[in-house]
Amino acid sequence: MQNVFDMTLAVFDRAALMLICLFFLTRTRLFRRLLQKESDAHTPLELAAVTAIFSLFAIFGTLSGINVEGSLINVRTIAIVSGGILFGPWVGIITGLISGSHRFLIDIHGVTSIPCLITSIIAGFLSGYINLKVKKQHHWKVGIVAGMLCESLTMLLILLLSHPFSLGLDIVMSISAPLILGAISIGPIVLLVQSVADEKEAIAARQARLALDIANKTLPYFRNINAESMATVCNIIREDINADAVAITDTKNILAYVGTGASQYNIGHEIISENTKEVITSGKITIKNNDEMDRTPQIHSQMIIPLWEQGVITGSLKIYYCHSHRITYSLKVMAVGLSQIISTQMEVSRAEQLREMANKAEMRALQSKINPHFLFNALNAISSSIRINPDTSRQLIINLSRYLRYNLELNDEMIDLRKELHQVQDYIAIEQARFGSKLTVIYDIDDDISVSIPSLLIQPLVENAIVHGIQPCRGKGVVVIAVKHAGNKIKVSVKDTGQGILQSIIERVANNEMPGNKIGLLNVHHRVSLLYGQGLQIRRLEPGTEISFLIDKEKKHA
Image (cartoon, rainbow, N blue to C red):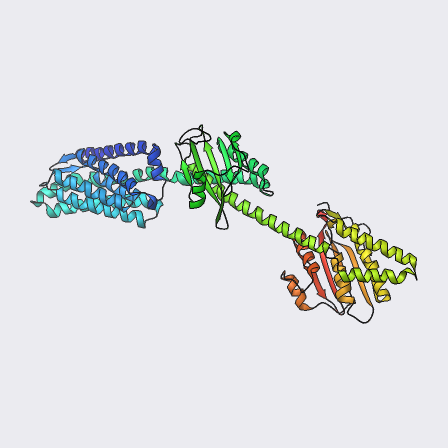
């Protein structure tokens, strides 16, 4: 019994030595980088290197084994199973073939040489199967079971193939317990190496958090993309990742460069380098960890990452360090995540700028759209009343001049609602001169309302009520302009007693489609939606139409 106990300790002693060697291997940069790769990303050279390492462990296990009646108590199976579980079938199978063949060749006529050869190869296949089919978190447990099964199979084969049988039985009785129990060592070996590989996920989480922190800091500067804002973005990135220099480019020029060597560049006019052109053309990340740049020889490490917008490369993010080998795996993870966020922010910013430009263009079109018929009719009304009522004509000229000036002087700033109502009153005064008693306008406005709104929100609705509601009717018509408190909002409504709006027009406005020639109606709907979250509310009445919208009181100083 004491002898079995000593042999078991000897197995664990050799397994511990293998564990220590693996621990020191995991401290090396190359081995850690290899562990943190996905299993299907290993190159043939890397797999060959790992196979060589575990084959040496297995051969060492054989050579350092304890001879018991022509058999060896060793840790060969532990090395084979561990290698296959950790690095896949090719490593397990080839390690099994190499170490099994070695075991056979050093004792060709030995009682246990053939059983050991067979089970070494089986251990390689079994460990590869575990790598592919068993969940990673269960590898260590299943690995122990697989090691025990392989050693048990070795014992069975020794019994079947040994002559005389009594010799095989004596060998099995002596070595089975130490070898089967020794398979427990597979668990700690697998867990040790996996713990290093799992650091990849922890690194990715830390770097993702860093990328999000940087994105949060840089977000305000993407609202208006220019040389100054891009330089600020680069500076934030440089400080947060302790880089020596950071640059952002488009597909032709350097947009911003901060840090070491900045004085060497003429920002905005500087053509991108050949390395950057290659990245933009290929779409692949370029890392140079021991290189010297022509323009800035003090920089020896650089990483260039493409920036994408809607599936198209629109530029690059460049990170520089003065010392060699500063571009680590963790930095690459962070930089890739950051570049994706920057790409999204730039894409959103450009979309926002395009939308703003479109809104401004539509606004300018609306401002310049002074209906020629309206102007012609206004001048006719003034002309016809000059002789009959000069004072009325004079007032109409004042109304028309104020109306025209208001349209020509408008800008993108918010204005007081009452100023907008003054413009509406000038417009209505001119229309009432045309229609006479046919048009009645009622103002229902709360006295204590003070709120700022964009210009030309109400007048287009009033124009729509008069031109498309009252004018086509034969009889008299009434337009009611109401501005009332509605809880924490203010409701603006324009109601007429005209012929009533068509349901098809209501639906087209709701779907953001141009309802005939009513550009003013759709323009107001768009702008109200963007500002207050809800567009125009249009109701067909009996008779007439009511168009309304709600203004948030808290946005009155926007």
